[in-house]
Length: 85
Image 1 (cartoon, helix red, strand yellow):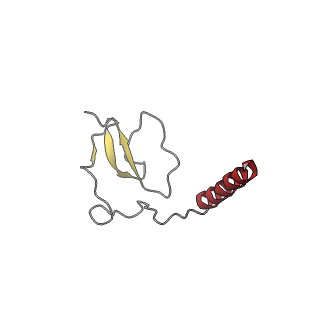
Image 2 (spheres, one colour; image 1 turned 45 degrees about the vertical axis):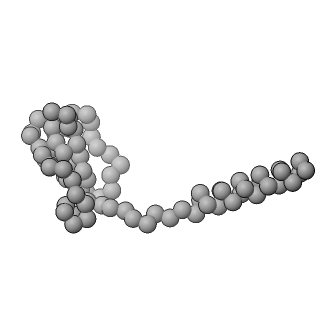
Image 3 (spheres, one colour; image 1 turned 90 degrees about the horizontal axis):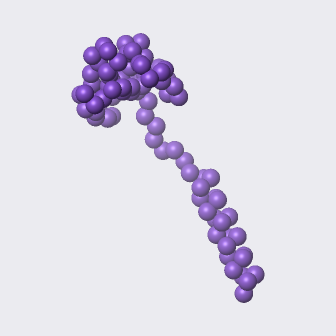
């Protein structure tokens, strides 16, 4: 009985491993072109020039107190800082 239980657990773990490693990404959104209203919808974008911003940007029109943004794909990305006022 113990051998059968062990075999069942090993089989289950092998099956779960195959499921986890075989996942495919079916959608990825980049922001190189402005898809506002067609591919996605956001709240109102703004940039008041004093490190308060929420908008699609290439980084050249924002001042970021918290440090440079990283790990984005392409040139454009959505950035936000100091959103609570």
